[in-house]
Image 1 (tube, rainbow, N blue to C red):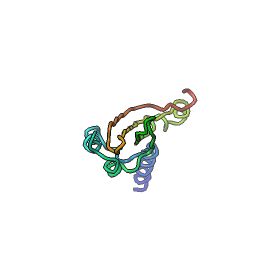
Image 2 (cartoon, rainbow, N blue to C red):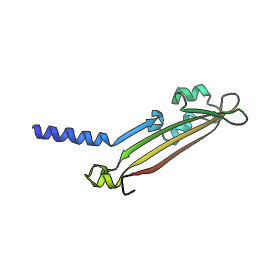
Image 3 (cartoon, rainbow, N blue to C red):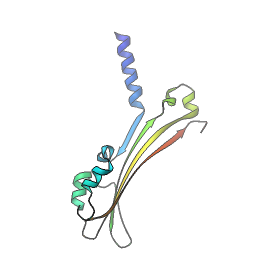
Image 4 (cartoon, one colour):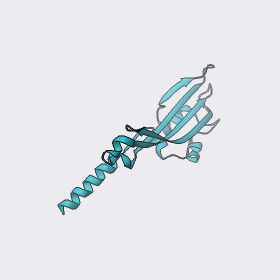
Length: 129
């Protein structure tokens, strides 16, 4: 019984040690159609967007003074090779999933335009990379 419990705990620790995430948690599970329902061009206001997504991660302005809000979410998952002794030191890495939502507001604080992008990438670590 003890051996099974130790094995289960060790497996859980290894599985959880391989993941990390950061950013807007609403974007984590959102898909493009859900975002389009909440961020509507010509209708949604800053208050509507903030109620749905929370405070923007970054705020900037165009040359003409229009406001741009940006939200991001990223998840990093370690590759299994990282956990192989010696091999992980030589050729480790992680897969990265990233989502970015950028919203442009007009001078009345209404959504003028928005873009959503989801991408996958890879981080290579180790002496062989």
